Each structure stands twice: as structure tokens, then as C-alpha cells.
Length: 358
Image (cartoon, rainbow, N blue to C red):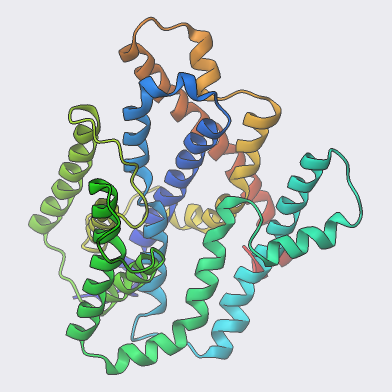
């Protein structure tokens, strides 16, 4: 038996962190391309694009599961002074150091000039959460960090069944109900705020942390098979059934896929490898922060996207176009990931950034 914070089992967190970061990059490569592309060339590939989104939307939930697993572990003591001075400060500095330049860049692009007053304007925008869209996660995690010490006190007195009941209510109200409203095209089913699902992921991490697990190869096989079956089912629902609703972080299939992926790693499905997962995991936060810079450079300044390249290829059939589009999305993702990783590596070489931000 090993607990959630023992040495040999920490590697699965690095693996999941790296995979989730890669999924975030692919998601933004895709959504960024559709944002700047004439919609007239997208519909014939809609099912493919939705399938790709289905297979990467688990990325942010995995980040939250990891945070809940680490910070809500009963064996870990986290007081407000420690949480604020170490963890909240890190996120707040990241928001300021990256959010302000991103907000300022939007002002520069809009006005096609730079004014010194743009700096305080960008600061105000950042404090209000009006910076590049991917920064929203930092505001969310900052809030969760702020409530963590209080939440840990509640979890110490609340029985496990009580926590499970709260999670069930959140799942039904913030995940199942909104999804049914969307599928049935109604607004009659009562729902909880969509943001509740992020709290659900955080609590899911806690559940994994309080459980001890003995690696069971049979269980690993079943967990891996469940992930594969769910992913295949999501793809077939797009390509064969024509299901057209885009998955969101709070929809049931996303919740299930994220929890199954985390469970597969937690249960020992991820073994030791020669790949330097710890080093790669240490770069993940910086990669998350900087990768949209390269997406924007490619799409808005160089004006090249997977769709523009596909159009120039002149493919004659939808099937061939889908195959080419998959390769193009992968290629763009690798380029952005490589550039962002190189930038992250350089930034982490700066002692003050490495110590206090990255």
C-alpha cells in the first residue's frame, strides 16, 4: 500500500500534467484557427473538429484534479499564511507578469499605436480579468487556493459519505442538468452554476488523495479499456450519429473521461519510463502561460492556419481533407508546443521567475 504523496507514485502526476498541457495547446491551436477562419470552409469538417475537441477537453479538469489531489490531501498541512505567501502569490504574480502584457498587446493591436497610459489601462483590464482568454484558469485556481485552508477544515469534520453527497448534487446540477437542457433544447431543468463543476473536480482530487490503492493489473486494464471505449464512443457519436453539441468542461462525458484518465494514472497504469517526466512537468505551467503567443503570431500576423494550408492543398474529397487536416493540426500543435517549451525553458533559467512565478 502507498499513499497519494509517496515518492514512486508522484510520477503519474507529472505525466498527466504534461499530457494535459499538450492537450491544452492542441485545443487552442484548433479553437484559434476556427476563430480567425472564414466559417464557410469549416462545416464539412465540423464532426472531425468536434471529435478532436471531445478528446482534449479533459485537460483543464485534469489540472484541477491534480491540484485537489495535492492540496486537499489530509496528510498535508496548509495554513493561510503558507497558502497565501507561497501558492497564491505565485499565481497572482503570473497573472500580473503575463496578463498585463497580453492585455496591453490587445490595446496596441486595436489602436495600432502604443501609449504610455496603456500600461495602467492594461493593469486595470487584468485585475478585472479582461486579458487573454487562457488566463481565466489562473483566476479560478487563485480562488480555489484561497478557500483551500477553510475547505480542508470542513473536509476534516465532514464524513466521506457527506462529501460524496455534495459531489453528487454538484454533478447533477452543474453537469447533467445543463447538458440535458442543451440536448433537449429546453431551459426547464433546474441547474446549478456551471462553475460548480470546477469545485467538483477539486473535490474529486481529494477523494483520490484519501484512498490508498494497491496496484492491480486487472484494474489497470479495465480503467484503460474504459477510457478507450468512452473516447471511441464520443468519436462515433460525431461521425455516425451526427451528435453536434460541443463538449464543455462541465458536461458529463468530459467529467467521466477526466476522472477515468486520472484514475488510470493513480492506480498505477503509468509506469516508470526513461522520459524525464519531472523536468517536463516543471515546464508545464510556463508552457501554458506562453503558448498563445505563438498561436497568435502564426494566425494573426503570419496569417497561416491549418485551414489556409488545407485550402491550398486542393484536396478533392472530404475524407482526404479530414486526413490532411488531422496531420496539419498535429503539425501546428508540435510547432507551437516546441516554441512554447523552448521559451518556458529559457524563462525558468531566470532565477527570480523560477523561484517566485514558474
